[in-house]
Structure formats: C-alpha cells, structure tokens
Image 1 (cartoon, rainbow, N blue to C red):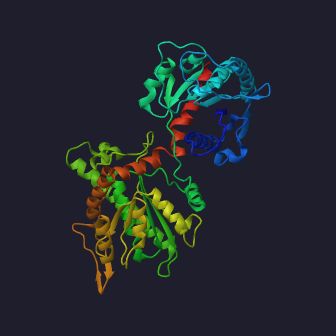
Image 2: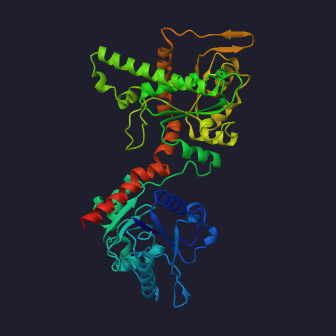
Length: 479
C-alpha cells in the first residue's frame, strides 16, 4: 500500500500540535513498512525536520505555492458567502495540477484539516479538482478542531468547507464529535470514523529506555512494576514477584515486573532469577486454582465463570486493557534488564524513565536505612507498597501515604520472620485485592495507565489506523 499524507505545512515547529500528530502518524506508517510520501508547502523549510520527518524512508514532496512566479498567499475564508481574491481560481488550477502529479500512484491520501480550515480553502478546492484525475485514490479527511456549524446557505467556493467529497471518509479524534462532523459535511455518520490523537510515552526517553522497550513490552501491561536493585535475596525480588503473581491471579490484569538488576556477591544470578520467576508462577497458580475451587463450592458458574474480566470486576479494577485486547492473563511476566543487554546494571536516568511509565512500586526489602528509590518512584506517580517491618520504610511510607505490608526484616538489632495465618498465599490474596482496588480507584493512576496503553503509537496503529487502511483496501477490492 502507498499512502500520501497531505498537510501543506509551511513550518514544522512542534509547538503547533498538528505537527506532532502528523509526525506520530508518519512514524506508525513507516514502522509498518508502508510506502509513505509527505506533501508539504514548497516553502516548508527542510531544516526544521525532526523525528519521523527526518526518516530516510519518507518521501518529502513539496507542493507548489507559486502562480506565475508570485507567492500564493493563503487567506482565511471562513465565511459561507462572499467573494474570493482575483487570482483564486487560477491558483487552485495550478495547485490542482501539482496535486495530480504528486498523488499519482498513491492508494490512500490522508488529509489533515485540508477540507476544514478557512485558510486551506484554495487547497480544498484544488484537491477536489485533482480528485477527478485520480480515480484510484481514496481519501481520509481528518478534522482537528470543533466541527463548524453547517450554514443555512453557502455559495461556491466557500461551500467546499461543508460539501462531501467522493471516495472520502471523514475522521475525528473523539466519538463525541462524529455527529457534528457528519452534519458539517452533510454525510452519514457511517462515513465517519474515530481516529484518536496519540502520545508516544517514549518520545523523550533515553536511548537505553527506547532500546529496552524494543526488547520487551513496556506499554501494554495493565500493571507495570519496576524494581531496581542489586540481585540479592536481601532485596526480596522474589516477594515482589509473588505479589505480582497474586495481583494477576485475583484481577485478571496483565501484570509485568521489570527488575533493573545488577550483580551481587551473595547470589548466583541464574538461580535467583529462577527463584523469582517461580515465586510469581507459584502464587498465580495457587490463587487461580483456589478461586476456581471456591466458585465451584459456592454453586456459582464454576470454571466457566473464572474469566479475567469477572475477576477484575470483582476486585474493582475497571480500567482494563485497551479496546481489542482480550487475551486472558497467564500470570505475571518477569523481565530482567541484565538479560536484555545491561549485565552490569541499568542506567539510573533510564530507571527514572521506567518509573514514569510504571504505576506500582513494591519494596519488600529486608533492610533499608532510608530508601531513596522509594522517593524516586513516588516522584514519578506510582502507588507505593512498602515493608512496614523495616523502620525506615515505615517512617517514609507514612509520610508518602504508602500502602504497607509485612515481610521479613532486619534492623536496629532485630531480625524478624513473618508467619502468615493461614498461609502466605492467603495473605497475598487479601492484599493484592486491596491493591487492585487502589489502582482502579485512583484517577491519576488509572489515567496514567490508560494514556500509556490506549494512546501509544502501537495502540493507535493496531486498533485504529491499520484497521482503517485495511477497510479501505477491502472497499477498493470490492469496487
């Protein structure tokens, strides 16, 4: 498939939000291996390019902005009736002829505000003329502002801002705007689609964070836990993993624990990593089986009702995975940065990036004098779960509003070992249920996870843009 993106940008300052929206869209298309050309004004400076605009796979296609040697000045024709300037018709003919040349061979043309903005009226009329010579091109018209009220009377060419265009679907960022969009162009709502703007959570991340995100999924988990530290039993990574397994079991959510580990003298890395993974798997299996048994004993729907959706609802977790993501949780996933390219430790700056993506921080550490990492996680908006048996963590957690649990501890001349009644699994079950409730009830944590999951480039591509392009391909095949 060959896609043209028609923007008519005359500058690429990212302070203009549409420039950012188009850049993200270009990146999605390019990363999918789509043949992409970007149509901009011939006056758009190449020196302002950044990100996807610099990608060598992108064809940079300047569109004429001169007629008879004079610059075409765009005028803001937002009125419904009136007169255009003397050269308007001739300028549209010049631009239309160039559009035909520049769109030749494209399958789809995505237009950004071309049919909407008053100052693009000259391009609006020009693309309608060009379309007559481009019978194989289908168009997507994106509107980025509030749809304009349809006037009772509009005369040509001003009526082009309210006139449907053949072989065109109209796009808007939110579903709430679809009825107004359809009214503006006098089309059926079935000719409109929702195309949300996206946000790349990794846009300003360090190169290490971007490399890690390419190696392991950091964006789609419902619960992302980040635990940095030396790979030693004293840091109790296995206890964090066990809680992750419990949270996955009782909520049905996708839980991922990323251990930013570095070597320790008192543990053999591969053996302790296996212990950590087994801790997550063991608790997940035990609690899922217990949940099935309890439901069957209570005369409920039994195994057939033990879906992740039902568990999530019972625990108050209503944010859920992005639309279209219905794969049941298969247990908590555990990843180690030392296995993914950082055997001697993951850079601190990049750990802070990960805290910015995460929504849950668990510190079951055996002993701490202060716990600076707790402050770091808190500063990036994570729910804190700390070991209240460690005095420093209890003190700091009280000041930060942390959720407290009890694990083994050693400090100030004491050494404790927790005994859980009736079992450690039952203890984890109860606290995981409460933690799931906190994650669901806190609007900041819920919004943070939703922004990462639902509006990342991958989510927008998989759930919106690619299905739309596939739909257009099907329509073309049918025609």
